[in-house]
Image (cartoon, rainbow, N blue to C red; front, side, top):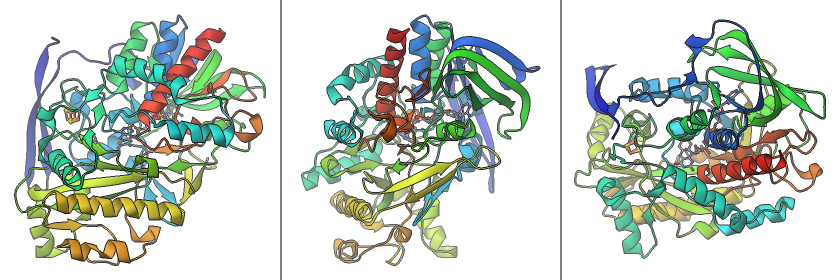
Length: 532
Ligand SMILES: Cc1cc2nc3c(=O)[nH]c(=O)nc-3n(C[C@H](O)[C@H](O)[C@H](O)COP(=O)(O)OP(=O)(O)OC[C@H]3O[C@@H](n4cnc5c(N)ncnc54)[C@H](O)[C@@H]3O)c2cc1C
Ligand code: SF4
């Protein structure tokens, strides 16, 4: 058992200071990782394989290639975060770990917030650790759409390898807490199937802090799992390095160019140039197209076909205390309507974020805040099969312009999910719900009042829709005229360039995307090693 020590956090708040104490691993999980302070001048080096981005896609490729004997460099723009670096205050946490300080939005017929991480481990650092295999029908629809030679059976061994390495297992009863159990109760009494989510955690304490960072080290995010394994196998890991352009002559890549960037300010310092036999882009669905476009590799499909799982949340209000901050962040879900592209989940986020959903001002708002210990948020994510958006590099800087229009058919699917959530709330003993939809009462006090969710039609701009599941901007296809990479992640024109993030998905996986991203990355790494 590794040694643990106590860490005390003291954070200023409006009313004084908040103090919390937790046990953290004594030993740094990031030993061997190069950080900003290590760089003293221009970096010029070479290797066999450069992997750009240390999220679920890049971390898997880096480990697998290093273990296969490749000389690997893994580049990550953000810094590493240890337990003592996490902030529980939502604003501070988002400012430190997320791109655009967590204020990124997709613009279109709805104003849709979308979050991407900027730190060692990518999205796995801030996500809820849900690991779900995509149902076979989604992979079949990808196959039909772009002709790729990929099936769920072909992905299964890769899913299994990733799950085994991470120790993915169902959330244990002991850490569910009332919030997750109320959701189960509601599903049970409606005769709907539901189950504990399978997650990449070991010894989860149910602290509900996945979004601001798991301070106990229970979450097996990439920075404490795949990245250390890559380092043990000989990979070099450089954090605070932004890859900006792929060096190529139109048919072959020979490396990348970029800059060292200061954590949290993104201020550029030393230049970086790394030569390599091949390059794997895993900078995420929003950043990989930017690198391609800035490198002059802006083929027809780059940045196009952006798809999301738009999500809506409803807050259940109970007449007894349930202490919603206790229990695994997203410990329960229902796949009962998954064939319709509707997934229902328990949710949690820091109070500062959820409290923005509470209605009222002045004393009313104060009263609502006082009921916080009797509330539980549940959410629906939906397949947006008819909706599309795109990602374009800005002329200056590295933040993309993101656009997305939610099709009315997909909005209808999302609203159906919200109605089912409302039914779950009542069936779980709620005495009120906060639907979070403009144009109807802020609080609905009975099933009858909630009928308005069935009788009225809503536009995307009526709802607070958000999404952190993004895909499609460098999609896989059989033929070069239909996508950016083939089903092995290999660029159609430049054969020593690969992509291994969720951008290669042809469409929605219907469930949370991380595990599918990792299974595909595992398959891509295996393909590279076989072709060596
Ligand atoms: C709050 C939140 C909760 C979520 N919950 C879940 C969940 O429970 N289960 C699930 O399946 N999915 C979840 N997701 C989605 C999931 O985390 C993402 O789909 C997943 O992380 C995508 O992996 P990726 O490798 O494609 O990209 P990312 O995770 O975005 O990783 C890309 C990495 O590349 C780095 N990078 C970007 N540009 C550059 C550059 N130019 N140079 C160097 N490095 C660069 C980034 O900093 C980042 O670390 C959640 C997402 C969020 C934000
Ligand atoms: S619920 Fe808490 S202990 Fe469990 S993985 Fe998330 S942050 Fe870590």
